[in-house]
Structures are given as structure tokens and as C-alpha cells.
Length: 507
Ligand SMILES: C[S@@+](CC[C@H](N)C(=O)[O-])C[C@H]1O[C@@H](n2cnc3c(N)ncnc32)[C@H](O)[C@@H]1O
Image (cartoon, rainbow, N blue to C red; front, top):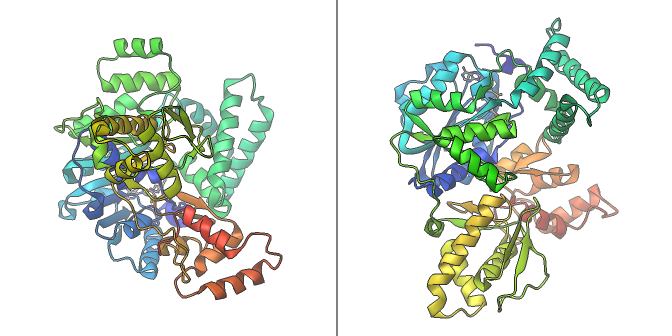
């Protein structure tokens, strides 16, 4: 079957919000008992060239990954990468979602990113049917889709681009012509005093961010995301209704910070709670207030009991990491003076609880590693010489602080169900993630051990490919001196530290 994606492949990238660990963490907090991600089965529908699945398979060697996509060309590219990297736990199949049969078995996590809104109704229905037929009893499905009411505004731009390109058949020319129209419109429409102008400005910012590092393939995003023949946004309530007809219920959004809407006053929240009769109505009303145009919804089976009142004790089963920094270089841990920790996304945690302060400080010092709750509690209590009588209080206060920070900012405290293999020590034969080295062959964007995208400079792109355990320190120093004789990009050890901090070194 020849598809549009064979002619112009989709830039196949990783999406941190789809990782089984993210799904398992949220499910655990909501009272489910999801399968440990270190030994689970994962299915991705519409996996393109495997850009999302391959880094997961590398990070979780004890788990099994299956990806299906109708585009043979994309599957061939992905399968070549699987063989070249030497991954044994992932299989990519050229298969129409409509042809998925029961033999495929049961999966603990099912992912469909960028598929639901972009396929005809019968395929959309089959996506949910696959979840109904193949999801494990405590399994979690991730489905992203364009949503109304926000997409009404994007629809204006889509209609303008479709109109402008209506006589153009060549996909690349369609994309460049559409892009020029957007550039023209964003200059022609004042951003300040019209709703469309303000929207256009923020969309252009998004497009530029999305294209950073993939400019050569960037037009493919525009072509497939906005100009695809099928592009059917839905209201959240319609999506939830569709899921319910397949025995599935709304669990949460994949960005956990979205679960507790920020920026609404107490009285707004009170009114919302009075208006909404259930969680679906609550989410739908908040979409109206926020003009949401895209959702990344997690579903579970209808018979599963979801505990929406979060219990802090569940933190004991999780791991924590933090990319925050203390506001004071040397925070005072021993008394109850308040200290602040700030994350790059603006999130701030202020606490006067000595053990929480010591715990946050420990996390900032070991980042990108995560610590289990047990390790964190022990290290932090040790650091402040905490007494035995305070143990119960320390556990509850630390759990509450970590949970509060996690719901507020995705960078202040990250919660996980496991920690991947990561190296922070500089070895004489450094090894970077094999998948990242493969991605670096033709991209400045690579995936790190936490399944996040790391952006490389062209020099680091070349250097990363040499971190294969066969190039020793002296050889790397000599190569770097050749590429950058003035040494202005930094020393080898500075680059290696950057790679370690970016969670790209595995040994
Ligand atoms: C917008 S792309 C998203 C790709 C990838 N999930 C991502 O987010 O980067 C949609 C993908 O779904 C695939 N697709 C569309 N219809 C399909 C079908 N009926 N069966 C299998 N794959 C399909 C396309 O080939 C394409 O790779």
C-alpha cells in the first residue's frame, strides 16, 4: 500500500509524554497497579520510522515493543535502524491498523500519538477497538488528538493553506507554499488587536520551535499535521464518549501538571465544580475556558477503580529526580528557615522542612539520576541528623512536598517508576546511548535516557557519534583539537560533562 507518508516520511521523533514510565507513574498515583515498565509489553500504533519506540526499547531491555505503521517505507527505515543498533526487543511491522488481529496478544501500554485525528472514522474506531481488545486489565493507553474549541482557530489557518495549495500536487511544493502563506499572514495581521493575529503569532513560535534541529524535514510536520486530507478535531466529551463505547474511561492527561488547572481563581474552580456532574464534564468545561486545541489523553479499562484524591503514601513506590537549583548556594538545612528551589520552567518550591530541603539538595546534586523514595529519605535524614521520633512526620512531609512540586511543575520534581542506566562518571572509554548515536547521524535532536530530546551543536553531534567505547580519551582529545583548534567550544571533559548531564552517557 502506497501512502503519503511513503513519499514524504514523518520526522520520527521521541515523545517523553508517551513513555510507559510516564504512563505508569500517573496510573500509580491514581490508584492503578500498572505493570512494571522493566518487564512489560508496549504497542505503538502509527509508529512511523520507530523514532519513539527505539529509544524506549533500548532503555527497557527486559520489555517487548511492537510498532505498526501502514507506510512500508517508514517501517523499512525503522527496521534498518533496529538492526544497525542491534536491538532485540522491538519489532516494527508494515501493517494497517485495520488489520490488527487478536494474535497480537495483550499489551500493558498502547500508544497512538498523532494518529486519531488524522485517520478516517473507521480507523479511528479501530484504534479504540484495539485498546479494548488488547489492553491488559491494569493497562494504560495514550491517545493524542486535536481538540475543539481551540482547533476552530487553527481550522482558519488550515482552510487558508488548503485554499492556497488547492492546485498543487507535489507534497514538498504544497508545504513550502503553505509555509509562505503563513509567513505572509503573520506579517499582514496585527498580533495585538485581533484574536487571529495573536493566535498566529503563538502558532508561528510553536512551528519554529518544532522545526528547530529538523529544518530539512520540517515541512513534513506542516504537510502531515495541518494539511493532511483527514484532520478531524473532536471535543473532549466526544472523545470520552467514543472511549466509553469501547469499554474505556478517562484516566488523566499525559502532562500531569494539566490535571490541576492553573491560572483559575478559587471561585472559578468552585463554579466549575458546581456545573460539572462528573470528570468528563469538568474536563470539557475547562477546555472551553482554556480553548484547548490538543489533548494527550490516558485511558484505562472502565471497570478499573480510579482514585482521583491523590494519596501521598503512593510516593513510597516511586523515584524522584529534580532539575531545580537552590536559590541560595548553600541552603540552611538544619533549622526551619524557608529555602527555595527553582526549576528552569519557572516552578518554585519553598519549604522550611529540613528533610525536604536536604532531599531536594540531594536530587539537584545527582541529576539526571533519580533516587528511590527510600534512598532519598535516608540520605536526607542523615544529612540533617534527624531523630527517630520525627521519622513518621518526615515521611509524610517529604511525600507531600514532592507531590505538590510534581503537580505544579514538570521540572521541579519529576516522578518515575524506575531509573534507567545512566553514567555520571567520566570513563577513559566513554559510551553514549547507541540509539542517540544512531539518531545523531542525521539529526541535531537525539533522545536521552529519560526519553527527552537533547539538542546538539554540530560539533557535539559529531563527538557523540565517537562515544562508542572504541575511542579512548587521548584519541577523542586529538580529534576535538582537529575540529576545533582554538578550543573555543570547550575541553573534552566539559563536553563529556554536558553529555552526562544531558543523560546521554550510558557507561
Ligand atoms: C502524523 S504521523 C505520526 C507518527 C508518529 N506516531 C509520531 O507522532 O511521530 C501518523 C502516522 O500514522 C500512520 N498511519 C496512518 N493511517 C494508518 C493506518 N490505517 N494504519 C497504520 N498506520 C497508519 C502514518 O503512516 C504515519 O506514520
